[in-house]
Image 1 (tube, helix red, strand yellow):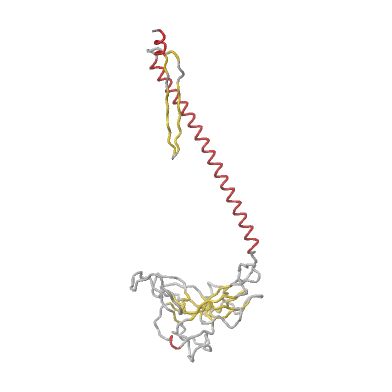
Image 2 (spheres, rainbow, N blue to C red; image 1 turned 180 degrees about the horizontal axis):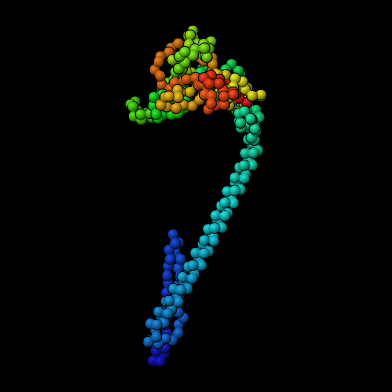
Length: 307
């Protein structure tokens, strides 16, 4: 009888709390050691034990958060260190493969790949790249772009192939409201600038389509177009000489400045004034440009060089 009373007098309190952090669940538990408790003081003991357990769990949780923050900070430092090491290795590789050389005129990047070339350029106004044996013609075509009356569309000229044109998915109907047009020389009253030596017996190039060719120099690696020059810097090879051209400044659309060969290839069958992307000669504007080297109203020459 006395033994049973002693067994009933013993109590054990277990409090278990689970906390979810993302996909991880952390468990905290407190327990009261067996001991003699009176029926009257049992409830008070449970209350005090629960409060003490909650305080202890709060302290542990606070410390764990501090540990986790420290771990995240160390991880961030390690990642930053690894990124810096990778950038350093890449920079070292770049320095070894593509050294930079100062070119005061062209500021071109030189790639030191002995025995290899590949300088690409577009020869505006010609259907051939040249007679040199070290020039490859990638393809030939005609210049095109957005219509000169439109605000949107592209802002550059494109050299569009005229042979082996291919299509992917398409629908034969106007849908996008974004169109590509052909091009024309707009040189009325300026016939003396472009030679007709390569033309098919025509007197002037005005309103004829603008041909083009995409070219590759086999043994050279850099290309530069220099406006207001008729010759290339020392040690550079001249691919062609011409005049700077672009859209008219009063037109809605804008285009890039390109160097058009002064001896263009013009075919008789391409004469038709349908406009589209237009090519105008570019003149200097003294005052905004330095008036010493530039003269107001004078057409800007240009040259394309490779090295």
